[in-house]
Image (cartoon, rainbow, N blue to C red; front, side, top):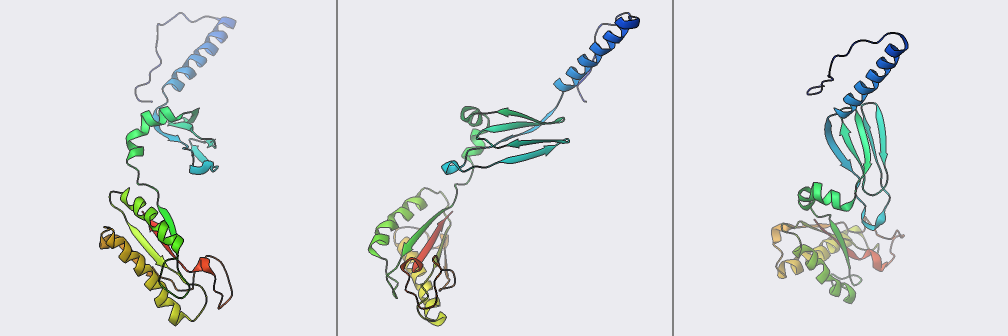
Length: 215
């Protein structure tokens, strides 16, 4: 390997059993020297998931396989394969702090519900609307997708425009509170994607909704 040399003082070569022992010792020293010269090529750390969900990463390198399945389990990737170790929050912050700070925030989803047959918020959703604005304000360059839905009462010809109208209500409300119009995309899905599966002509309140994705 580049930069790795095994060397030392030349000694007289022993004979017999002493020679065999000397060769074994030399092999051990050489193996140790080569192991010490393994070149670090990268590092993998398994970060804890929000809510404590179980995750795992399988690393295959240089004919070796290592499984990281606990929070902050880690491995150095070396020229001799993965070398596992246990990291902690402090080490991760010290090593990867700038990279972690630069990550985009994970998307957030909100659902607002509507009065049957109308493009008017329910009272509870009118109050929940402020939470959407708070999340948008946290993001330096927000990207907002608004998707309107209906229940299964009525035809597609009725529900398609109604779902779009509901999404437009949310869009106009966001613009009125200072969200740039160009940051908001609007879609109407009619009754095609119910939150709760029902038959036709079922007035299910949980399907009369607008989903808002803030990224």
